[in-house]
Length: 363
Image (cartoon, rainbow, N blue to C red):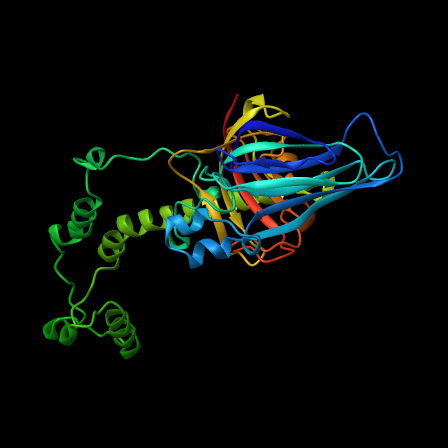
């Protein structure tokens, strides 16, 4: 959801104000005017709108245009008291091309303001362009560069290289196996002790394979050497990378900010720093505490918003501030800085939200 333009209206006691928004409209605040006609009284803002059930029941457009008192619903937007509560934050979205009527009950003038919005913009936690099965962790992806399939053509296949390596031992000539026993004539001509004969037989048995032929130890070790060494090196490299990642995560500790928002920098960026009023472009993955992903933006057009102006939840305005281009951060948003007691799509009420974010651009 992105703010498109500013909207405001002045409500005067005794006069009804009817509006038909040309685009979706979000009312964000109601406040008393500078001059108070009643310095201690209360002023209530009432809103009258067409019951949505009427549009569901009627398929004929001519019937929809005919309003009746039964089709209208009235509710209270807020109540303001001079000297006590002179303004109230609102979070009400009015749909475009629908009729809404405001009316004041009281003597003081009230100012309403908000923004025309685009609800189709890519904002957490709704605009998900991937399924849960396609999600991946930002720790494993340091950029959003995608490789075109044509660039993969002509690359050398590893299969041929490993097949040649595994065939090396068979190409080498195998030495003739040494006889495990002395010739009968030699045995007859010598006076060897029985103990020496037994030791030679045992030694020969240790060198025999499954087919009964003697296997030279040196050749066997040489054949198993090259392939085994490369596999060990790969395993060692993977272990080393995992250790480095674990060490980086462990080294980066959480820092608590305003409202209980916690941040942990996974990777520090460089260059321009995100400050209030700056326009930032982000990648993100949003998770619940149980690890379930409820929204993400990991490819395509990045999510862009204006920092510190209420375009996103408070936890984002607080948690993204201070990031630099290329930086990666984990933001833990408590319910009060997220969606509170409201249930939003796949987000249960009073949920703590965990975002893995990456800053791509700051303007």
